[in-house]
Amino acid sequence: MARRAVFPDAPRPLILAHRGFSRLYPENTMKAFEAAYDAGAHAIELDVQVCSTGEVVVFHDYTTERVTGSPGRVDETGWRRLSELRVHETEAIPLLREVFDRFGDRLCYDIEIKHKVHGPSGIEEALVSMISSRGLERRCLVSSFNPYAVKEIRRISETIPVAIIYSHDSEVPRILRSGFGRYMCQADALKPDHAQYHGMHARIARMQSREVFVWTVDDAQVMKECVARGAAGVITNDPALAGGALYNRPPQDGQSPSD
Image 1 (cartoon, rainbow, N blue to C red):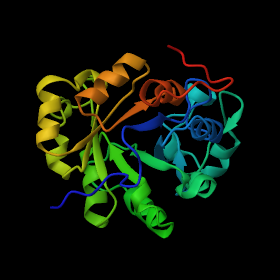
Image 2: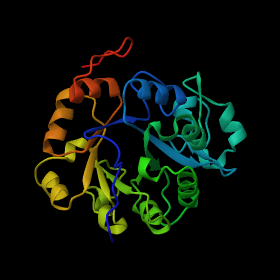
Image 3: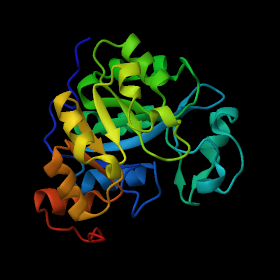
Image 4: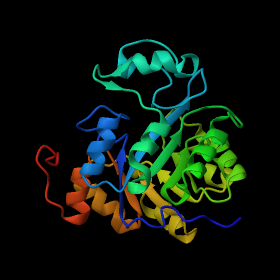
């Protein structure tokens, strides 16, 4: 099966803002995404789930308590209630369509599916429809720790590229911790924990001609080292820092690099 080009119109190395400019602003909110765009990020990395009334919401955790202070599961809560909650008391939870409507093709999007189902969950069809209806196939990458979700995107779309995410975290099934999911879902790209991207791991990725986007990197020297090893991009909480490290951009007011 032919590999699909990832962000073919974007420069390399790519700066992907992890949940937006989340070092300074509430994660996965419009404020964080707007700040990432203003800081020169080429792409935003964001997390999506389906709530109980069927909307595709941008939210990382399966439960709402950590960032909103209100208990509950996202998949058991309707959009009306979720829309009333505030991330860190100030920012609304966005819908994915609202993010697309706000930024269009001015940004690229690394969309991480959050679900643990061993098979299609329904969000895959919704994502493909939303991306295709806006003509954003060349601006999107759909990724997940879950190879079943990635495989389903691969099955129903002929154009949208996909990536498998992995790390040695204990929550990741042992068989998937070194990226084995790439073979289960025919991943076009890889998203390893940056600590795993070295030595043989980096050489195998190059041999397989898969682009690598490492996460989550908030140290300028580590960013440079990952790119030197062949990473096509870095996923970071601090896109301003990445702009200075990888493109020698001066910091903007209020966006001084943390390192």
